Length: 246
Image: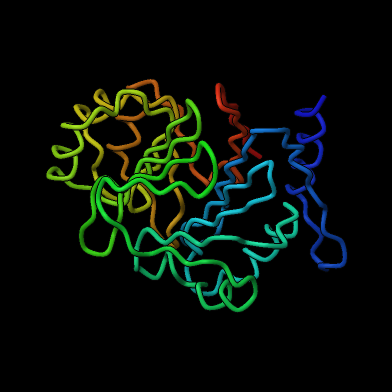
């Protein structure tokens, strides 16, 4: 019943009001120890919401410049009235384009300084662990209960070789770095982390690398591009997760 209601509400986003007079509100119906991960389909850049049943909300990155109105609309759809923390994983404009607006509007705690392997726990059971930091980018492991999301910010052989020395065989979701523009991750890395799901954000005027997409499909990984699927919602508790797209 809950997912049926969510389907009806999210489906209304396919034909949003063009006047701005009516915003369909979406209740994620999070029960105790549940969390929603919402990958926002911005026209340019990365932004991901983590909304916990306790009411705490974390925003990962803010999208590129000139996507403020898109962010605002998605926040309204998902009842986002407060942002407790803003996590920045890169200093490129596609990730930090709306930091000033977020800071002025919501006043979150901004976390943009990291130390490799040092665990940060913003709320119970949610562990963030930077695995590789270089060139202003942070690749990190995000774990909530048994769900593990590998948030890639690098796409090169050295990074993959380094990560393959770490125990990452329990990754469920892989966020592809740099909008999938490069021919990474390679097959050996995909075998090492063995994800079921891959997420690719949109960079305006660019498209994911075709060889990368072929590799993901060949590995039987469910590949979700925000440019094709729209909003991607992962609803999870401490033991299982579900993925929905609209």
